[in-house]
Length: 297
Image (cartoon, rainbow, N blue to C red; front, top):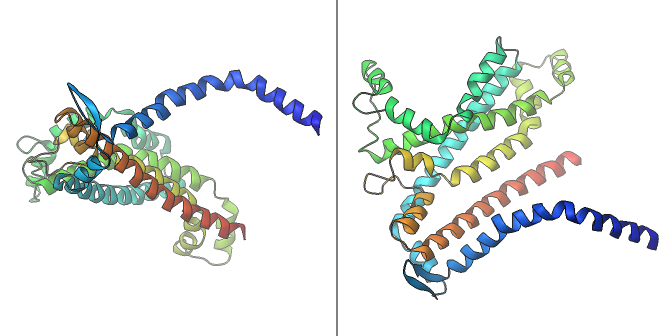
């Protein structure tokens, strides 16, 4: 026993120099900045003024600000609609590819192409396509007798455009997860189901959907966490306007920090976002663990 412990200590001592750079990187990039932002959230701080402790005043100020609640409502609305629609589209495309679609390699490149485009380029492209005056998509909608997205003046139209851009940009991420999970399902299960007379809908409900459930939960978990930090799409398209009606929580944080120079409230907003993301992640992880435990039994 002592010999085993000695070998284990010797192995850890030998591995420590190899893993130390990673630990230093994580400590410097994540842990220390997070602790500093947490400390700053309890301070009153701005340019040219020494930080002073104010307790939970920054959190009270944020939670009592109507602009924050509007930004939170906008974030929840866009994220809930975009993530679920993105999931349905990703699942549908994954099942279509798995069914033996012709020219899959070419179509796969087309589906994954948005992930290779920077968000700045994508936002500039969408601003042109949906320009209220000369946008090709706007003109096409008007020619078909359909209403256009007047996203420069109507807040709901701006949020719709942001949601569409978010879906287009991040659909490849959801698709890759679901497509890989679908390809991992053994073909024998489908052959056995067809031999028993199961219809395609029954195969989907009883074979595909239960086996894809963990991948669906993982895709939704990551997309909810990433989408809750929605910033670049809104900032590049509307900058939160008109009159701060299309702000997301991340845009509210940015304005507090870099336009109003209120670093304490910005830090408090950041930790509120972290708390909401952790609660959301905990709910999905709990659901995933329950599903895995049920499968194990």
